Length: 370
Image (tube, rainbow, N blue to C red; front, side, top):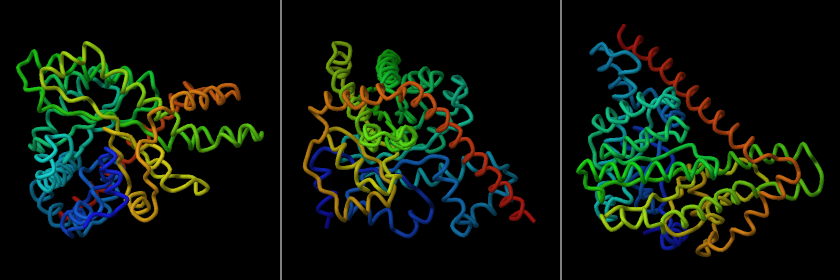
């Protein structure tokens, strides 16, 4: 029996994806329960999530011992372990994938974050990850850096579905959509069935509020303090406006006529960081058709418990959202400065988590080999 609130969100056109994956989730049946009871229809992962998962040594002990005996180093082992988890999750979601014509039932796996500024290496690893997981419903996550744009297009051109991650700015989002369209056009020219290709554009939300609100607190005026908790939602709503405008063009219509599916906006970083804000803020205020909301379990449980889902909360809010950004600019909170800083910090966080993951796994392999 589905939860009433998560069902209402699904009925409003929002796909709920869980922002978490681990071996324990798969073997215990907890992920299957969330599918049945909380309308979860996909999963996203990132280096931080896998690092946390691998802290549970017991779930991975047997495989680590096997990999140590096979002589694998930490980098080889981490790809084997994570791709196995993603493949198993893909199998679990296969019925949803089939029923949704490929839109949902998706599981994401990210390229090595150290490659975020390296186009050719990202393309190569995206192909390797796709082959390792070997499931049609996998999404390869590629960061939306300037260097990542060409990698996104080329990966799609190779017939591989992509989750574009770490988007903060509206300008970069427009570039991501262009890369998506370029990739589809090339895939079609390359003879791929573009009706099989899907993509989401992961627009990060709560980190915008964390950075902007810190600046507003430093300003300290009543006008500044009144804007706290508003930037993240305003920015995401304007991204949805970009989405609506971009997928009505003649360029898009030609691809749609050939069977292409629009790249859906995905709201990422939806766990509310500020306890003064409602814990379902980035769910209720960003409810809109044809979107994905990827939630940490805490946010999913809060949504199921007390979220008030009232349908589309985004369409028609663009003037108000622009006003928020204008007011921030008038106070000296520079939009470009904020989003540029967040991209650098996001990459740094993922790279740090990846390095910690490799260090911990190297230690586990060494112990298992003794």
